[in-house]
Length: 217
Image (cartoon, rainbow, N blue to C red; front, side):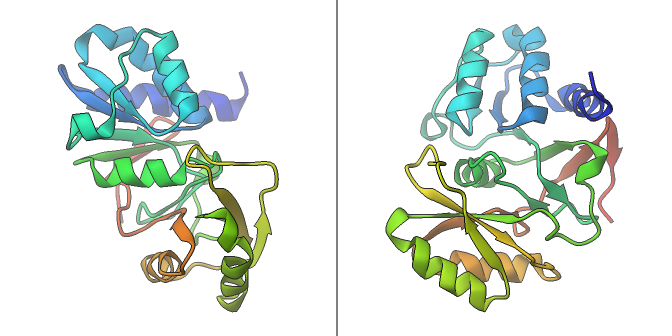
């Protein structure tokens, strides 16, 4: 196991500290979350069910015999555990490398506590080094792309990728995101945008980096 994988696994295991008996647990997507799902399987008889942000995570949860229910049936969630592609010192995130950003944002909004699990490489001072994913409805790809250029970004269509919602992804390069909340709001207001991968208005409540709980500045 690589050092990065060891850090991801350490964060995933630490996140189990936030899982309580009888919970319905929101579960995100990605390589770090895959470690969390494996760890969650060791206590599957103590939780009620999981709500999943992607078909990929749903399949892994079901392989472990963990019951997966729809968010509409679950209502408000006590806990959501997910990874991130980048995290700044104020627990604001860039997510969407796995193209599940919309469902992830919905579940984060529905959860009382959002625990983000990462390895140290994901820690940044200013968001933007990792391209910002934007989910768009297919007919709006070019329109949204032009608007994003107007905001100073360089959007690149993630060809061959269709989200679980049937949409496309634009990855926006060359942004230095000094006002994550403002940019999140501005991009989300562009017609044709489903959502962008900035998690600033609903930042993580807790970040676990390489197994260490990182306090919000």
